[in-house]
Image (tube, rainbow, N blue to C red; front, side):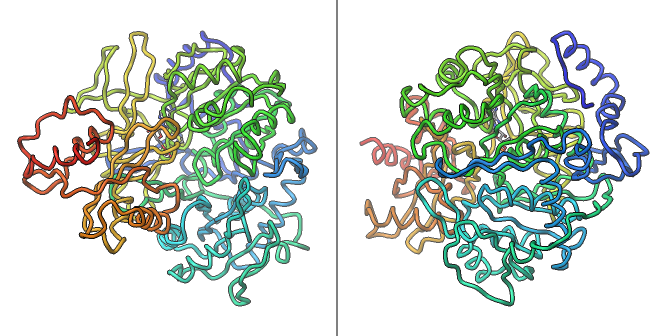
Length: 633
Ligand code: PRX
């Protein structure tokens, strides 16, 4: 059984052991799984390359551990509980036995379509059980899944498909989110028109049953292919370091990068972190509201809970449909015990009023989780009082796509909680704060750049197709350490508070968006000459997107121009990257070498005009006053 820490003393003891004898600690975690061949060495890592190997030479299949392993003891227990968008529709329950049978059928179907070990399969689907089933089917046959959030545009989808050189896209006909119906298959068709030359077939899951365009050469219905397949499929033995999945995420420069996770280390870490952070007990109903298109959905809807033999809920809809009580109605209906969501959802629901939290029995809740962005104090207290009734510890979990699993978090009922603090590292995780000169900050009550100074099993292995980029972004700033891109503060008692990104990445509603990506998208508008994008504080989204644009004459302060820019961004990236504020400016503050001074633009966007810092080195200092005048009159 995977370790589940029970007390503060045990946490402290195990943490110490994990630092003193990391290989022993991780070997003990890994031993609880089914391995086809044992590993010869726990780890072999060189962070300067980086070359990262865990459970070297071990052979396993993660789905054997998610599914087959549980059949003797919990074959009839619900593995996936699916709650539809429409509260009047019935939920679906899949027991571990049924889920295994479905996964095997889809695995055989994929094989029939020529998908082999190592091939990449892109998913572009709503939150339906078939998404989890499809992902697991890929893992079972050794294909590499890459789930693209179904809110991205055709262009963004095509970029990811091309980068991964995917052989197949799996999608649905339509997506039902709240009152909206999104033409998913049409977006895939558009992506195929743009590029996607590596794609040989598109597998379409019938979700709403609406009309779709069809190409007999490429398209095939999921149900037609899967029906009649055998319910048995031998899991492919995978090397610990074979690719499990690629997940695209934004960085400060260039196009999104494909973060690579591998089979062995990811399996060990996602299960270990799930069991400890949520203190999952037999029979509990666990619900994470994230989308499977993000890392949170991978690790804490699909893999972590299933590896731990939990009942994991998948919700198709949105928090505010049919009203802002939907989350709490679902918690009451299914007697949810652990609930995991993002601060942006909490803030949005808080703004809708407390009446929506009333008349729902939330007494089964034991643990509340938060993820993706800093949770502000007001939202923390609201969550604690109105949802947790002061009875449920809040785990403010800090981690990243690149870390694969939760790294820093309180442990519910074990370590203390403090609003805004992700607090303490899990055993096995060694965070540190660095100063700009590359020295580790050892004192408490200090702020610094957050790094992890020792490898852990689920860390990023590479960025797909561009290892050098991985090295540059994460392993070069502080040699021998993984650099997170976040700033953090350690309080006088050693708790960590995440302050936010120190690079040009903004966190909008918990979604990571690169400023360069948004600028490139804006610049595709024919009347845009130049643009600069920064984040600014936003009451609901955490950060909003503020775009400064130099436009061709004639488009100044023109409503339709602003609309056009937003449409362009939606088309190039997706609606999540649309600027919240657009300001047409005569110029942008630049250094003598031509670099845009974002520091100044961030201050203006945040309306922090008192302390603009030194502007004398600017090529065009006057432009700062002009921009302030345009923004604030
Ligand atoms: O800035 C941190 C923020 O989200 C970034 C990682 O984003 P992504 O890879 O999309 O993964 C999100 C879900 C794990 C981090 O660099 N972040 C994540 N969790 C927290 C957070 N910021 C503050 N507090 C958190 N709990």
